Image (tube, rainbow, N blue to C red; front, side, top):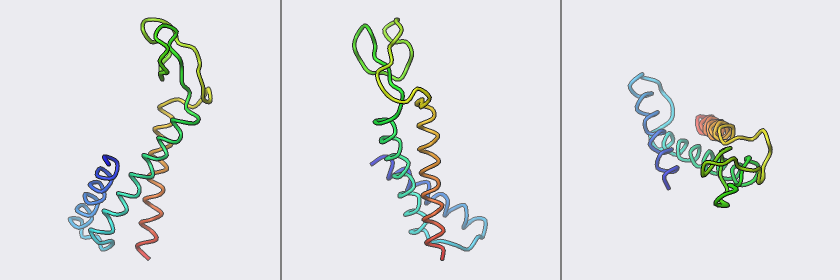
Length: 111
């Protein structure tokens, strides 16, 4: 829900900036819809990548699965995921995916 609302607000903000700049283009509804869909695409990409390929570690003290090399004051051990797929990379990829979906949808609606 937060991703949908946040994306819609970003889309509405983009409409406001384009209106202030005097740029003809999409309507308020279209901008809001593009933001909503882009935000959801990014959020779903983040969840999918985080659950499938993100590098995760297991705490040797409490047994929790964590994203860091140290937990409970002790080193963690690799639990799953691709060694090079950090949480930061998942966040970047998710943002790029959401942005690309929004750009593509915006171009389709602008036709």
